[in-house]
Length: 322
Image (cartoon, rainbow, N blue to C red):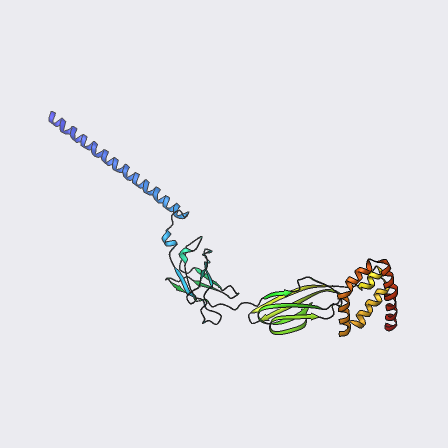
């Protein structure tokens, strides 16, 4: 009897142990599944928010290289700045400079701030020789590195490099005024006043226009240059005011006296229309201003000039003009 009881006790104990082990294994399996689920969740969220990045895959080295040629398409040019930009990311690098026969090379994996590059990305290659000749080429990134791109520089646009006088220009009517420009390459020039062409020059690098009879008013004087490479323009605001008769004005103490109007009309109608008269007017304007200053400051001299010079001159003018 005792032996039978002991055998049953051992069997019960064995069953209990097996049941415990089985329950333990189930708990462990649940724990493993829970840990795996949490890990997968973390990986998914990390990928979504960019916390895990295959750095080597994103910043994969890829070389763009080639030669830069001059406008003829055959002459390599050294010293050209070449800047490469990944349009998809907006990233670029400091320019490389062509050397040893116009060659350049750059690595897309070094672009900043984002070195990501993939097949098919739009890549911009900008070449600038520093004299106005440039080229912009856009290509799709190839599947295999290196990728060859040979930019050909485009001719520089014409540029007015200097001009005179400074704008705005202030003059009195009747003066002779010259406008000048210089250009960086041969061009044709059209001189215009308020949109009306008054003079042309062909295939020049410097040009000037002289107006012989400035008229009262505000004028836009333009020099428009052009050739096969493009155009450029310089415009002056030319402000022409009624010119004072310096000596007569100083003698009378005003520019509004009727005698001065007579002299002004004589100048406009009889002197300015002919070369000799224009030369006389130019000399008068050049020399009379300092004389007028002396007359203006001396009452006795003002009276003497008014009665002894200006009035007789006005009388003679009226007789001639009728």
